[in-house]
Image (cartoon, rainbow, N blue to C red; front, top):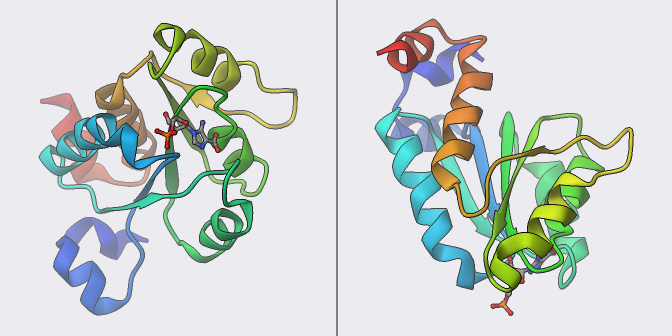
Amino acid sequence: MWVLEMVSKEEVKKEGLGPDVAVVSGSKSDEKIVGDVVKQLEVLGISYEVVVLSAHREPEKLEEFISKTSAKVFIAIAGLSAALPGFIASRTVRPVIGVPVSAKLGGLDALLSTVQMPKGVPVGCVGIDNGVNAALLAAKILALNDEKLRQKLEK
Ligand code: C2R
């Protein structure tokens, strides 16, 4: 656990360690928001992996990814009827941060889908298209066990 904080992304790969954050988007068309998330994670030196996997379109592949990745936090980016964050949260006890995307209806559809989770399956939801806040919230969660990251966030 501690080791990850001290190694670069290249070393994470070499050592066969998992990244800290799994960034999952429902479609290639969400790439602008994925870019915002990734940029912020890089500023903070947080290791990550990015996959495009839809809960609606490829549930088996997504399930396999969730069970295989050793990421500590998931950021799930999806527009329209956003099942993606809830699907991930239903299959892991690791924290899931949902980012509703403004694909249609100004993102209100995705916002309500992401935020209105039934009891027992919590998803943290940031504002519509707010990938930066998703990355910062993931950083705050990771910083609970990472003193260097905590200091970076305080700057
Ligand atoms: P396409 O452009 O591929 O048709 O996708 C995506 O996140 C995207 O914003 C349009 C929108 O559909 C969303 N999508 C979901 C899910 N899969 C794709 N909400 C899901 O599983 O929740």
